[in-house]
Image (cartoon, rainbow, N blue to C red; front, side, top):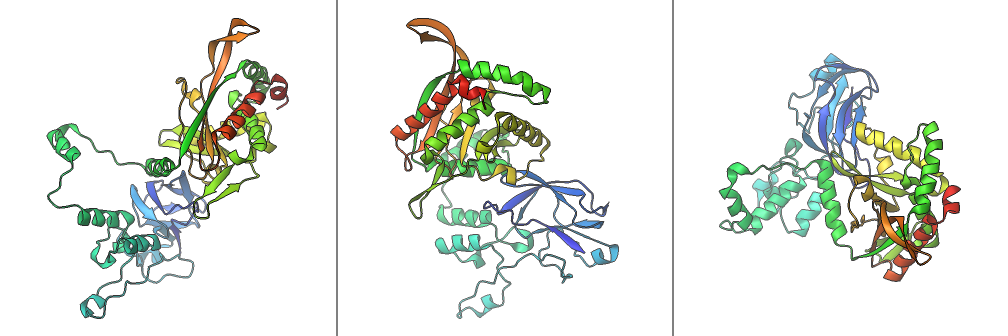
Length: 414
């Protein structure tokens, strides 16, 4: 018998959400057959069966899970009979070595003066929750856990802290207003993706941010993109401005390495990166996600267009992998693809130095050789971490992008 467990996928991900089961409890499944979809901070992942056999689901759909939690067991009927029927049981009967057991934390020792506390059951909590309790001088023995097997979750501890800190008679002004409109209010639970976006935006808000904006003569970009569209279409690829903008950005990053970096607040060091992984912010029905073009400097514009097209398909089908959404060194957000807006102030990803906002190419009155003419303009906005670089460096970087995007000869050879 084997288990399907929520394993550590890296990137600091500690919890997920069982979105839905693709099979029913008791079904016979085949090895490598997708059986459940789990939403993490990064993506919705289809988890396959490790072996063939009957499946016993231990955690139902629409449930939050943490690293190590057993989602289901797969084996023959005799093996499955030994499994507790409790869907949220954490401490299961002893299993063969192939079964991955959920790690149980060490019990919190009780003070010598309270022998009755020593007889109480072990406190189950992750190291991060225990650290939070220590930081707030709270005994986990006083906190009720709502996780599997009574595990104390981060939300349980936060709720305990909030209830302990706030006076019982205190009522928030917003709550008073809501009471007056109780029948006209709907509370919508946030998806795992939306929660992650919220956390990242809170982290981003702590970055001392500045913004540099400029207008690009998009005539060369427009004409070269039009020329390349025909060749790309023959290969079944949709070609847009974006691959050329990515290539121009990479060239500018090589000239301005401080933009391809991150800040280590603990050591107060700037980490320069000599690889070029370009993140692309993409809007999905679950919320904003970032796919990553790895080693963009080593790929042609057509190769990048193919990869963007592939990512788009995977995002729609929820088949994008976590590896395809991590390890970016610089991000571009294509606001222009939404069909509106003139300029924006994008929020910086916490592990990067800057983010480039690309807007809609529009017809505009431009001055050429002392005369007013109709031309194409591309607005750009660069949000940058002022701890890493100053305004002069940001302006130099955008000028580098401008130089490449306004050079038809450079764009034509990409």
